[in-house]
Every structure is written in structure tokens, then in C-alpha cells.
Amino acid sequence: MSAVAREWKRFTAGERAARYTVYVAIVAAIVASARTVEIIPEFLYDAPEQMRDLLQRMWPIAFYHYRGGVHDALMDTLHIASLGTILAVLMAVPVGLCAAHAIVPNRAVNYAAKLVLVSSRSVNSLVWALLFVAVFGPGALAGTLAIAFRSIGFVGKLFGEALEESKSGTIEALQAAGVPWLSVLSKGYWPQVEPAFWSIALFRWDINVRESAVLGLVGAGGIGMALDTALNLFQWDRVAMVLFAIFCVVVIAEITVTQIRKKII
Amino acid sequence: MSAPVAFKPNWWARAAGLLLAVYVAYAVSRLDFTWARFVTGLDNGARFIARMLPPKIAQPDTLAKGLTESLEIAVLASFLGILISLPIGLFAARNLMPPWVSWPARASIALCRSFHPVIVAILFVKAVGFGALAGILSLVVASVGFIGKLFAEAIEEISLKQVEAVRATGAPFASLIAYGVLPQVFSRFVGFATYQLDSNLRNSTMVGIVGAGGIGGTLFAAFQRFDYDFVCAILLSIIGMIMVGEVLAQWVRGVFLERGKVDGT
Image (tube, rainbow over all chains, first blue to last red; front, side, top):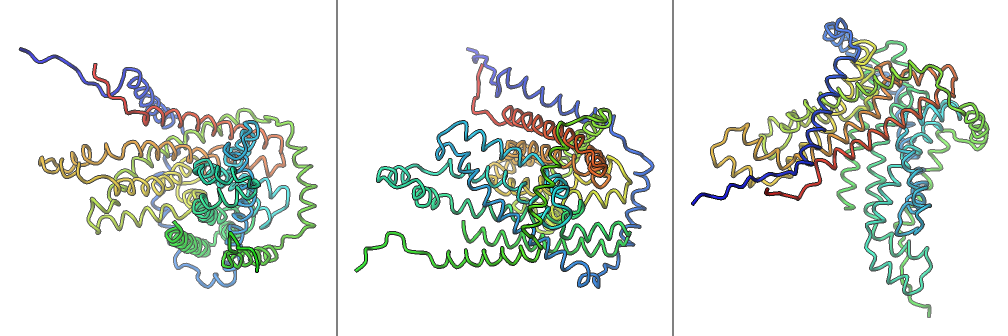
């Protein structure tokens, strides 16, 4: 008696074909990119020496520069990030509400809101900054609006998803009692999405602290302006000071956010 | 006698709201936002939009070359970044590695994460000169920071039973990783990798602003020449490229993540 010959396969032929297509496409993309990308080998050989030169020029870090040129710009950056986040949340909540089908049962409104969210996300914050610098002139106003407009998509998408996921029990109970829709939102939905809301806002604030540090490179205020000035004057010790300041702020922001999130979740 | 109150006023929340309002007022005055500036800006904005429309492709060759270069930077940076972050993420997992291995790995991941890719690109432009190489290297750093962190967290969450089982057969360390660890994290890893490719594609269009190759340089130059109709065309093509990338990433995720079917033929 022989065992029945059976071959076990994990994937169907179609699944395997799709997987191999992806593998082949990945390899093809890498090979094609590596062959055509313009890299000048001489620059690469030179890199370690240039790196050593860079580090030598950066050392010692110009700590004396902090009080005169970095502190104010650093505080501006934090305010740009915070104000931008607040503004973004204010704008994103109504858009997020419109994007959630459970709240606005109208497909056209849902898609319009989703389009707003997608277009906000697909433009980088540096591009938003360029646009707002062209409109409002260089300065923190452009930076704040850039941060705000870039964040709408992020906050609105995640907030809308949190709304969609909330349980319908309390909401139906409130609706059955004939409660006006504003109260349904504030007593039915809000308690369910509140932890998600604060966690999204904090998470975005953390990202915005990082992003607002570069906006100054295109003239949108904050510490990036100090960085740009130091770079243009080749004052590498001051560049090192600015980078050190950014590093400290980013680390502190991340620790703060993690601590608060632990408490509220 | 007053009627019973269903929802007591939350004085802490109101105090926090007041504090937030005070902060907004302070930050707004500090950053020098005025209504007059905003109104002038709106006026500028109308003129700006009028000049952007209709979009005009002034230099099709430059546009095509910039977009291709951005794509190449994104592909190569994702490939190299993923390649490097695999071992680093593995070393950073505290459940598999002793502390003297995991702490240096975690520190290097944190360092990679703390700076925005554009800032890293500035340093690489100094080190390896203008061009795509600087862009690739800076996005490799960003990818290591992101994938390394998430990969380490994914490994820390695996079930150790399978690892124990493989270890009990006397398998060497490499087989332990290949058969005990990787199958558990592969699906999440595909998610991280596609997300990172997407994010690298977005950032590769930006590193050009500081001279690190890609379409960003063309965009910034067009801005500085006030060629706003060309700027509009570039922005639209960037958004188009990113959206195509997002759809492709979604498809790849579908290929690798939708299973649950085990076929015996």
C-alpha cells in the first residue's frame, strides 16, 4: 500500500505569479536605477576626507552662539509647530467628520472631504512652505500655515478612521432618545474617540517639531533660518550648534509625547 | 431646588482650554501675525494662483530628468536602507540580543531618526558633493531610522515559542533567525518596506532643494525665477507620481498580505 501522493502548496498559481512579478519588478527597478543614476565616483573616493574635514570644522561646537542666534529661533520653531498643530486640528476635525460615512451619510460629501485630506498629504510640508512664502512673504506665518496644511490630511484621516470605528450602541441610544446631532457628537462619539484624538494630535505635534526645523531653509521662519545663515557663511561650528539644538529639542519632544501617551491610553 | 445635572461641568478641562487659548494668543503675538499681513497675503495669493494657471511645462526634458532621478533615488535608497536596517533592527531587538549589542544599535537608530532627511542631505552634499548620491545617502539614513525602529519593535513582539522550538533542534543562529524569527515578522515587514518606499519617494522630490538631486532642484529653481506656471506643472507631476506609487504599494501589500488560504492540490 503506497501513500497517496499529494503535493501541498502554500500559494495558488496566481498568487505565486503575482509574487514573482513583484520580485522581478523590484530587482529590475534596482538594477535600472543603479545603472542610470548619475554618481561621480571621484566624489565618492573623496568622501571620507571631506567628512573628516566637515567634522573638524564643526568641532568645537559654538555653544556661545546659542544665546545670541539660536535660542529665539528655536523657540519660534516650537511655536510654529504648536500653533500649526492647533490650527491643523481645528481644520481637520470638521473635514474628518465629513469624511466619516457614519456621521455624514452622503457619499459625495465623503469623497470631497477625502479629496481634501489626500491633497493635503500629497504635498510635502516644504512645498507648502514655498507656496506660503510666495503668498505671505518670508517668516513664521508661512511656516505655521505650511505645518497646518500639511497636518490636516494626517489628523483628518486618522480622526475620521477613529470615528468610523466607534461603536454604534450609545449613538443609537442617543438618537432614539431624540437628542440633537451636536449632542450625539459630544456625548456619543467624543467619549469614544477622545483617547485616539489626543494621541493623534500629540503624535502629529512630535512630527511637526521635526518638520518645522527645516522650513526655515526655504524662508519660512524658525531655526531653519539660523541653520541656513550659518550654512551660507560656512560657519560649520555654528551649524553644529544648531544641529545639536535641534537634536535636543526633538529628543525632548519625543520623550514628552511618549510619557503623555502612556498616561492617556 | 434645581434640576439634577446629567453632565457635570469638567473644570479641569475648561482650565486647560483657557490655558491653551492664552498660549495661542501669546504665540500669535510673538510670531508677529497680524490681520493686515493676512489680508495682504490673500491678495497676493489670488495673484499667485492666477500666475500658476494654466500649468505650463516649460522644460519637458528637465522635468522628465528630475522625476526619473527622484524615482531612482527613492528606489536605491529604499533598497540600501532596508538592507542595512535588517541587521540593525535585529541587533536592536532586546529579546534576542544582549544589552551590549542592543543599546548601540538602538542609539544609532535614534540618531538616524532625529534629523529631517533634508538636514541630513545638507551634510551629505558637503561630504560627497552635489547630486543624486547625497540624496540617496540621506534617504538611506532616514530609512534606517524608520524601518530599524519598527523592525526591532516587531521582533520584540514575536512569540518566543517558535524560536525555542527551532533552538531545541540544535539549529545554528542563522537558521534560528531564518526559520524562527523572520516568518513571524515578514508580513509586517512588507508593510514597513512599502510604506518606506512611499515615504522615500515623497522625500526624494524634496532633497533637491539643498542640491541633493531629483526634481526638488528644478522646483526650487523655478520658484526663484518666479516661473509659477512651471512650478504648478512640476507640483502636479510630483503629486501624480506619488499617487501612482501609493497605488502600486497598495497592490504589493495585497499580494503579500492577503493569505489565509492554504491549498492542497
